[in-house]
Length: 325
Ligand SMILES: [Zn+2]
Image (tube, rainbow, N blue to C red):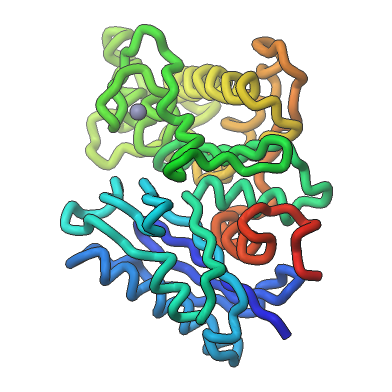
């Protein structure tokens, strides 16, 4: 029997899974992501998870035919590595991936993707109709997209296409993004930025009556969504987030003409009514292109891991016709 492996390398956790030729996960293994001392420690954690998942499945790593990796970025695709990862400590400059994983499984069939591209591959492979034109957008600590056009996953020369969170949505540029530029989608609507956006809105209004703990350093996006319908200012913030999310998703749809837009990431997964529904209701109003289905991902928070498995099965494409069985 042939086996395939997937790896989800995130800033806080590493996960690996072993699957059969139909994409059924037969074992998995996870651990925390080492925060140093160097990138090699992260590479070793990835190998530990792969060995662990193989051991759970009762197989030798050399029995893995092909592996897929969905990773935090930015990537250096030519080197098969992560280069100066934005969300890990500065001492971690380089995380070699495809070489060491290939050595472990005795195969050069190792496919590396950024996590949102892996998400698009997974959603495409595991959805019933295997759409050739689709977008996966994650709204979590940041915002990003994986895009499939005419059956091709768009990666860009260096593997970093789809950084849609850094598109300008607010021409007034009232919020500065973590990347240093003004008016980016992510600076208004990602989980990490919603609290600061709320504080800005309160200041613009010259102070507001609200139950939200705006001055608390632990004030989070969760507080905002939990107060929906209970606090007028929370509703105002949610409305503003919905507005900028709709602008962002509309731009993505205009650019790529997807048939389906799948949304994932913790902010979308935990708040379907408040985050996804307004986009679905409003997107028609700003589009020249056909209106796509706007859906929550069916793979939840396993989408990157499942996508890595799907990549291993389909030579990095998510195209079911290229799967072994
Ligand atoms: Zn930015």
